[in-house]
Image (tube, rainbow, N blue to C red; front, side, top):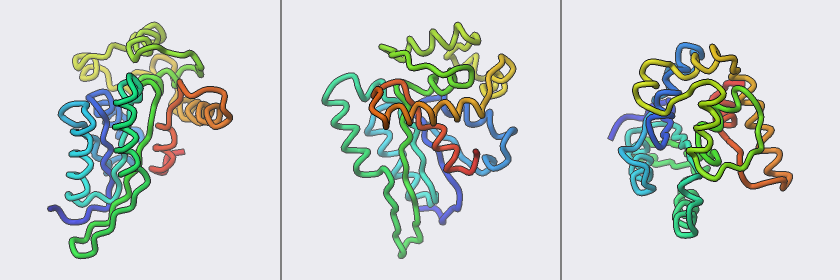
Length: 203
């Protein structure tokens, strides 16, 4: 068990989030203390293990970036996800004896994190059938390629801005997508990643 750390760990579901968050550190000093992480695989069981491990390691905040594509593939997957979300989302864990004081939050994107990258360039309400469809559109917009080779050679935030994208617009577009969802216009093509950045102190 680690000592209490007044810092945040952000758990993505794969390498995309890890490389993207690291690319932001040079731009935003407030993110220098953030530790991006990703489970060894994308199962909900592995995500739970990562959350529990982060709590025990003493992180003060555990933020989870959730891709909804695999959660919505069938009723069983969604039910399992909802159980996990009910257990952890917006939960504040305090264990005085061990010194643990941890806030946990989930941030969803439907279908996947690449939608937030599209929001760098434009707002869309398109209903994507798969996460691959999101990636195809992003590739058409800016040449994005979801491979480790691409991630290592192209710091993602800087790449999107060089291609004409804008981080502030991305956050504004996520907020717009959530307004549409709350107003009942749709239950797809939305992202809460902008809300996460707001919670981290980035407007």
